[in-house]
Length: 365
Image 1 (tube, helix red, strand yellow):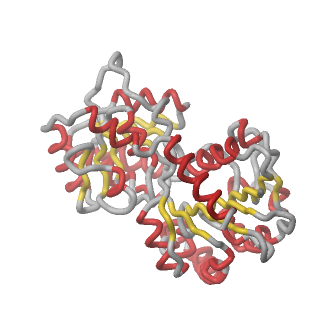
Image 2: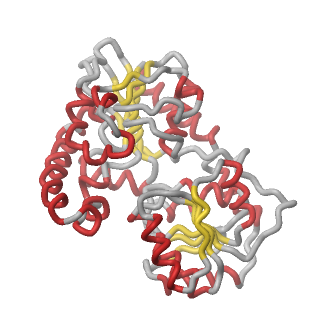
């Protein structure tokens, strides 16, 4: 069996999925475009990931988006001829590996690549990289989108992380997809009655444009509640410049350990999710800790947050709309047991059983 993952540079949601697959199939061979050694869990490292020609490109883990045009060649150079079963975990290129006619390929798809399809401006627009780079990159990403669609038929079965992503797979690949929600460690992320709630709002997020942290900063000011932001990324300095003169009470905490993130969940009155997510692990982790969520009512949040029961879904992506929902949430009392029960739908054991059943059924088809 071969496992194929786009790249390994840290333990984000995709790598937590891969970790469970590595635990379930410890004798599998693992392939990835590039790998920062020591950046992922021991369960993944034990498989000694095999890397592509991109591994030797200096600075790849930092500047990989500028190398996107090289990804098709790199992913197609893997020799998978001896494998009868391939499982890819893909948000970019992994789903396009070349297999033999006898092999079966299941793709657990996080999303068709955003920057090539409908979010080019958020990543490579003039305001992000400058007008010259944006003009050069646009046709390159257009070609990448055409390649992405043309290689969709290399997968025998698609499994999407949400109904939202399944609809994107239908739109861009013209393929149907089953849905198996990603795993959340609801044993680790759990309430602690000894930790007191504080009158603060919380963001846990990479600081990148499409997360719309700017909306959360202004909403917290309008709602007159302090905001704590966990995470880092290229937008941090820009967000700090927004927060400083606005009068908002914002703390940038940077990256924290899992234990530190859990502690922040347990202390916050609510977690904010202003960006449109394909699924969104953070809202589920928060609910597992008994913390309600105020989220944009689009994308994966509509599948993970129960409006008025485990949080609030906001109709408009504006600070005023988010502030109004925050204020409504502060005026009601939610049942902590309902929040916890909703999160348990996404437990690791539920995912492991579902994905292994899907893999085994394809292997014996």
